[in-house]
Image 1 (spheres, rainbow, N blue to C red):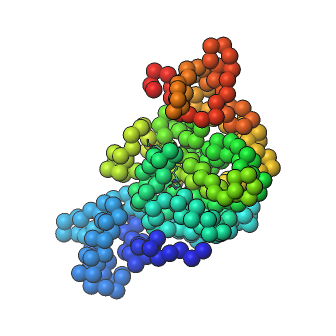
Image 2: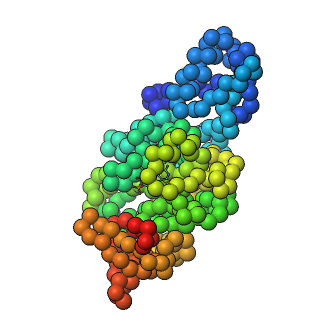
Length: 333
Ligand code: BT5
């Protein structure tokens, strides 16, 4: 797939971004010389950067800097970190500057008959999606926004529990960077220190009884600017506040190294292969929770998940399984 240039409006600004990525002060003169353009042209480029929400700082009499620097996603750097297994399963790697939603882009591709094995990362999403019409806050360079398209035959029931298994895969990728206190919250959240660090959104297309496709969408917070994060209406956390300095390209590769083999083997092995690992990471195991669905509310003690990924709750001494709804810790619902 060729990346539509509309998804890469930063292309022309990459050289100046790469100079500023070190977080140091650069004078307009030095930037102009390095880029081979006039100071006025540098100024125009810097103004455009601000349109991406990048907080450029002007240091009086000295020049400009991007506080904290930038660690841009780069396809070649991601590819360097891929395992042999992931490399052989990857159809195409796309790194976009800005898209509406990587899931929406991948769904479009799948509907046009392509997309299998395509992994798309975006520095920024203007309409990042959560479940049930909710949104995912994804400011420029603030995290990893990734969608992978996967076609398979045999009907959608083969993907039962997949969003939970993806959570396990993410936890494994984060463990490679020794991120502390990572837990999973049923059905699709990765938490850290009691706050949401990452979310998973699966979207399906095709004939759900036969040949169909899934888009696995994952958003992980790396360094969310406070301004953008103000729009998040629940406790959140980013990697920089627990484990600063993780290279985004290495993390992106680690995620693909986990997710591509998972997708390849999932129709055969299913959630049973991930259940124990999921339960070891369960944020709410043994705790009193409230499960809310559109129709009603259940109160019980969280007792893990079954082989299909359904939530198990002890309700009035009886163990019941639930396939949908949202859980919260009792007392905090
Ligand atoms: C999710 O939905 O958690 C799924 C998020 C999936 C995002 C990825 S990014 C790549 C791909 N492309 C997309 O367009 N989406 C996927 P849900 O469980 O419905 O949670 C959404 C809720 O999480 C929101 O209503 C907020 O409360 C909260 N939220 C939004 N942005 C957040 C963020 N950056 N960090 C933590 N929480 C956030």
